[in-house]
Amino acid sequence: MRKPIIVGNWKMNLTHLEAIALVQKLSYRLESDVYDLCEVVVCPPFTSLRSVQTTIDSDKMKIDLGAQNVNENDKGAFTGEISAGMLKKLNCNYVLVGHSERRQHCGETNEETAKKVKAVRKLEMTPILCVGETKEQRENGDTTSVVENQVREGLSAIPKGDIENCVIAYEPVWAIGAGTPATIEQANEMIFHIRGVLNSLNSGTGDETRVIYGASVDPGNSKSFLSQDGIDGLLVGGASLDADDFSRLVLSAIK
Ligand code: PGA
Image 1: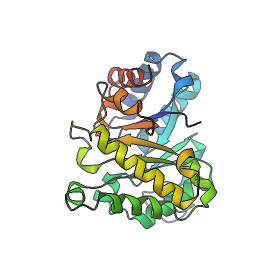
Image 2: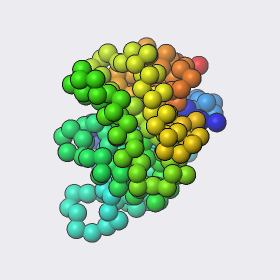
Image 3: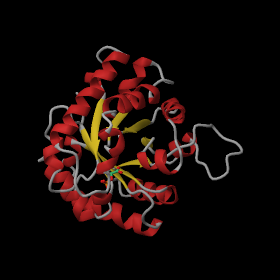
């Protein structure tokens, strides 16, 4: 049984005070039965993780906490970096790995995403491995091979039996922040392809692993994506920064 998951990626937005206000408002908007139907995760910037975590814990919220990135090393001389152990101690259950903005702006490679996935799994948190093609790659007909490599290589450092404990997020780069998402057909096609790749890595894994869609998801289209058989959740950027929008997006997706 793959429980749906809706993840808000706040990116480089909100001070810790604004982050507290947002999670409080979001929790207020979501009745407790929502969490029987899906997991709701927020991924604040590192500077807000502690504040959001204490807010979640002290108010006994059912919202889950995620981080947007992690360093693959346990500890040491890596100025400016954050380890999986630090995130675990903050009750993070999820960590985004290989988001396209990190691949694009920080030069993150498939090899690095593999190490990060391994570091996250070592501490039994759930990596959300982000994959997706650029506009140019799609136009060149390279979409399936690019995404296949991102999935294969990103999962190459963990045991095959552990793959189902990861979440794969298909995010076509050309649709992120664009206001226009991929079509349902495009999303279904790639998610079906990803399940095939997962099955080729370990038979049956394609049916066990949650594969989600992200890029320009909003309250008006969340249901059409989440109601697809193969789509187990949503990764949401812009529309997760407003409690009214994000709660409407969650409620319309699951009801
Ligand atoms: P968007 O971002 O919802 O603003 O398109 C999605 C993402 O980057 O995860």
